[in-house]
Amino acid sequence: DIQMTQSPSTLSASVGDRVTITCRASQSVSIWLAWYQQKPGKAPTFLIYKASTLESGVPSRFSGSGSGTDFTLTISSLQPEDFATYYCQQYNSYPLTFGGGTKVEI
Amino acid sequence: EVHLLESGGSLVQPGGSLRLSCAATGFSFSSHAMTWVRQASGKGLEWVSSIRNSGDKTYYADSVKGRFTVSRDNSKNTLYLQMNSLRSEDTAVYYCARALVEYNSGCYHFDRWGQGTLVTVSS
Image (cartoon, rainbow over all chains, first blue to last red; front, side, top):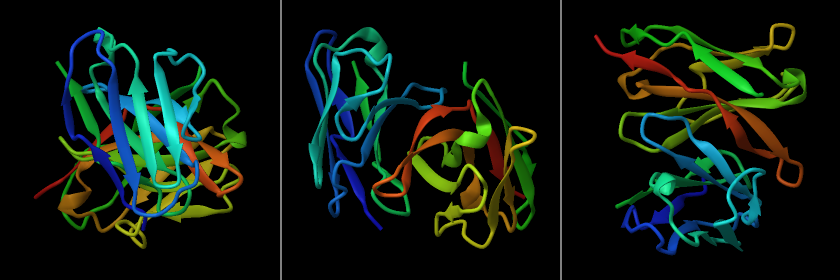
């Protein structure tokens, strides 16, 4: 199984900050990586696929990069609605696996 | 607008069974693979099972293989998860999600999610 490790697990930031979240795979997943956002008590929402392609409707302040085993999710200027938990997910092979999540808090 | 509505979650005793349903509207259900993802309270997301659009191929996490069965009725636009031999560690919110296939890998990511249904396994 491919293990997905996110860091940090918690990130304290302020509105306007540039924020970077890292996701590392235990073996190469090529570019088959997605990112999701989840707010407390809500279902996840889809942000990015193929490591760097923004889902339609997602604000351009979100961006993704990476390939192979190392990936990043960047929020260029943190907005109040961006305080949430972020998860990466590999879809290179079964079983599909998620990272443990990164909580972005004030 | 895509809408996914899960139902069927409840309190069940260890060893018991439960069937979850997910009613889909707003898109061509028979054209899309579907998936179940669960989340224990305060924990991260865990993929459970996926099914191809035609229902002819299914995939399972090792933690549920042999106990859970995913199925779908394309005439009713509904996804199911039959859960047998339930354990306390199956306690979670179960989400259904629309799955998008990556043809290069044959695997899925998930673009629309329901609000989830809570399954509690306890005596």
